[in-house]
Length: 88
Image (cartoon, rainbow, N blue to C red; front, top):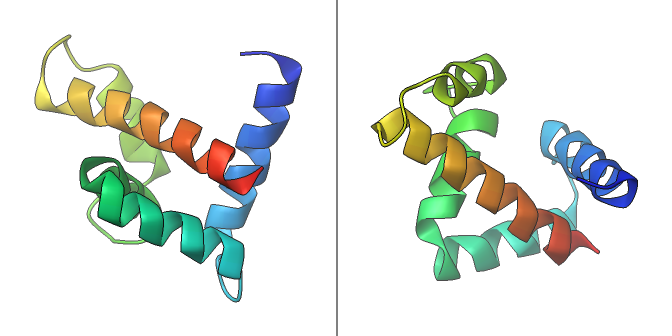
């Protein structure tokens, strides 16, 4: 990941941590929910529900290849990429 991608990821994470009144973020998330529900679901699990959290994401990353947790980690990374592009 280049420096520009890193900055964009940090900005997306910052916006996810304080989504109140962020209409652009909500619009991107709604489009993701409609067009990529599996990606939206994993972002929702990590950032908005109490099912998981950022610490759970690290556990998912350590899971064996092909496991459900590994798939969730992959979906999370893809979702962050979609989110970054939508917020640019």
